[in-house]
Length: 264
Length: 336
Image (cartoon, rainbow over all chains, first blue to last red; front, side, top):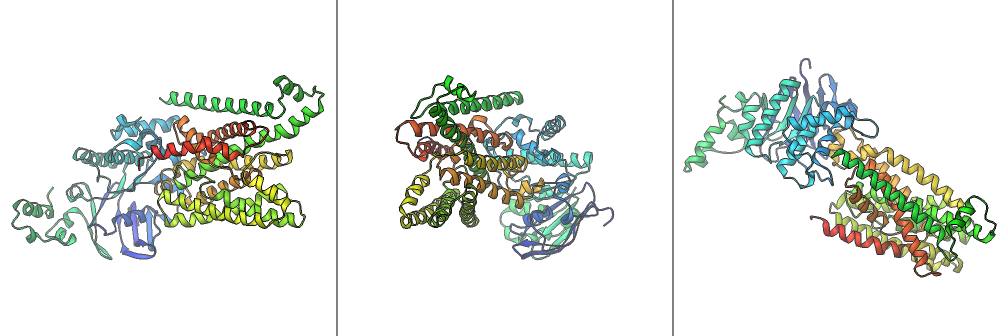
């Protein structure tokens, strides 16, 4: 376990006692970014929820450093790990700033009243994530992309050592996608933030991640660096695609060939 | 902006407090015998010699107004808890059938005990009502596991309410004459006939529950973000849920035991208070709902006593007139 900030040992995940993926072994150093890729329904969200302690494990252990996650106190875990999930959050009469401030929950006292310092951190994070202009907007009335950015800011406001993000870029336009990736790089450099996330955009996964985990079927299909994953025709295999199906459509064919290649 | 918010909160609490004070005084002064304000002051300072007026004030008006203040607040708070729990703006102890469940068990216990000539104490009434409230709540929870549609959940709550009311009617029909009169008055909801003894019991129960709920305001706030985020920030969801269910049932039970089922206060008041404060933050909403509920019920009880005096309206008649439009307004204002 030494030297790894995050690791799993024989982790088995699934729903309602139905096993989905078996014997997962993940090892991440502090500040590394792990991307989960795989076809729809492969269990990416299930894995992320299990890692975050939202779903009970069906076997195995998750470690943060040396600590067994299942034995950690909820308040302790809250200070070390934050999450952004895909479920829509419905709140009433809450400004975006209020939303971001909910990330301070583990640090406030019995009544949850923010200290001066907490307020400063909230402002700082909003600046860092470029959402200061949304500050007084009603969270219920902004777009899905804006909500996603607010929820990300909220997760960072929790000052975690590791974030678990489920498709954090799905509603973002290209500018914010890149801004988001830039932010992740910044956070890992400044704070040593470790990131585990699922991504649909393979191109992004290719450039941003240190490790990639491919999910398909009962076992982890493949786990390694982007170089190892994006070689030969593995992506085609993973997503059940065949380059030949696209012969005849020049552009799609060219695109298909390019996805599978790794270049930095 | 932050300062504006603070000023707004102070103003709202101040206004609600003033409303409670004014309606409380009016409730004491107005009735079949009108007591002038100076007389009230004199009675309080012990200078008034008119025995009848003093008795009316001390034994009837004052305990009644105090009970309305406490139970009104409790009712509104129970509504707020249920709305937060189900994330549903029209949830409340009455629509979810919780009041009716409490009423049913209390009716059963009353008929059974009175038939044997045993006196029913306030504590045992609350306990019976609590059992009934938990019974209905259990059904609603079972339903909520299967139904995730908010209107359907409310419909099933209303159905549970009907079943319980039907059982209550049945019991009343088979009971002795004397009990029927007693039961019938109470089962329609009324604040009349409050004694200091009852006021003491309800004060203890409601104050303790209010305090416990207020201490939960931080996790309640996180709960509003949904299960996943609440769990992530370290909330013990299971414990919180059990607490909300138990506390809202105690509050509902207390109201039913002393005043019978009262409609619409639980839905309307938290919604109005929320709009006034422009927030759903539990730490503000919990006390504001309580004070708002007190003011609303004092106002409604005043009307119930005076509109058709000397006949007294059932309190639910009045609360429905003012509360039902609020529910319609909420439904109209919702996006989907």
